[in-house]
Structure formats: C-alpha cells, structure tokens
Length: 274
Image (cartoon, one colour):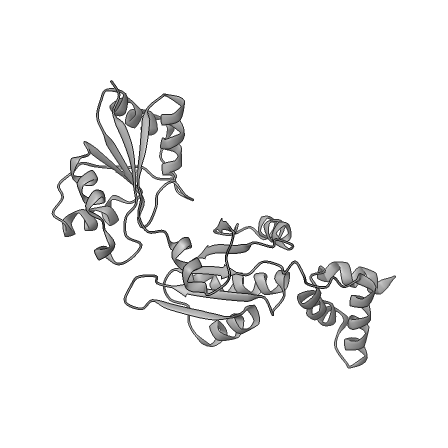
C-alpha cells in the first residue's frame, strides 16, 4: 500500500503561526520535500523537529521527482513545504501533486496561512471574487501581454513582487490601469515591520519614488469598475490634442491620456496622426 503526500502550509513570517497539526505532520512524516532546505531547517530547529529533508525546487530533475514517487509508492509518508505559506501555488510542489494524481497516490492538505488571502483581508476593498496573478513575467513583451489581458478585469487582482522590481511594476500597472485605480501595498506580512499602504496607483508610485522598497510585497488592486463610463477613442484623442495645445509633447500627451482612459499610448498616437 502506498503512502500519503501531505501538502503542509507553514508560517508566512511569524513562526508563532504554526499549527499543532502542521507540527505533528512534519514530525511524523518519513521525509520532507523543501524548496530551500536551509529555510525549512530553521523552522524545524525552532520546534525541535528532527526529520530528513529532501531538496525539491524549480530546477529539480524529473528523475529526482520520480525518486520521491518511489518512496511514496513503497509505503512511506512524505510532506511537501515551501519557504513560506502554502506550497503548490506558484511553487514547484505542484509537480509532486500532479505525479501523485497520475500514479494513484493519496494527497492530503494541512492548511496554513497564505500571503494572498492575508493581503486581501487587509486591503479594505470589497472582495466577492479575486484573481491571483502571482509574479508578473519579467520579459517586457510577456509582461505587456499579461497586463493587456488584465486591462478590463473586473475582479480584484493580487500580485506578488520583490523589492527590487516594485517601482517598475507600479509604473507598469499605473500605465495600463490608470493612476486612479485603488491599490493596497502590503509589506512583510506577519513580520516585525508589517505595513499596509492603501492608496491609488499614482499615490503608490509617488510614495515609493521617495521610499526605498524593503521586504516582500503583495499588491491588491481593484478591478475595473463595471459601471465605469466608457470613453470613445475620438474623445480620448480630443483630450490628447488639448494637452498638445497646452504645450505637451505628443508622446507625453498620449501617455497621460492613456493612463486615464485605458487606451494604449500607441493606439492614441496612431489615431492622432490620421
């Protein structure tokens, strides 16, 4: 009879958020698959848990995954954790769950905190549904395509971001969604320096232009308001012309109006030339 793979959530920052069931599962499992064994070892040492750690991350080979499957098939019970929060969401652990499903191995969940749900609760926004987008693509073309797909999303959107990319990401979000879109910027959740900034995208851009981003960030952005009045491209071009008449350069005028109306800057510039 094969063993069981346990998906074990772990604290997203404050280790006191560990649960009794999580501790028991980590202690009783025959082995623990960890994204970064050094991070997980700190957690285990804190609670005096002695267990065999196996490194399993995004660069692990199919052969390494199969060796884990063989241990489960032989009857051992395993646990999979990520560095913080729930594994298998934007996380390599999902590979193990997929393989277990294919090979008929039982998988059970031992839930724990998640940064996205915690940030959603902190945002103060009315949330009946949301879309979790994780980290935006880094390549400019892929990033632009992803944001363009989200331009008319009406659900609240949740993103993760690293401190060194935060400023450029906020700039990109403001350009596509408009500067007046509400945002909650949550930093270092459950840790000593936890902080939530509730503002709009223009305010967030200004704030972090003057404040050095530190820590891990979760961005909660309101969706496009379904009652929002649509503006025609002809009206948008008239706004561009008005700004040009006031002395703005055509490219700058198109960029400014694009932020406010949702049209692409290039789309407005092309219409202006007609």
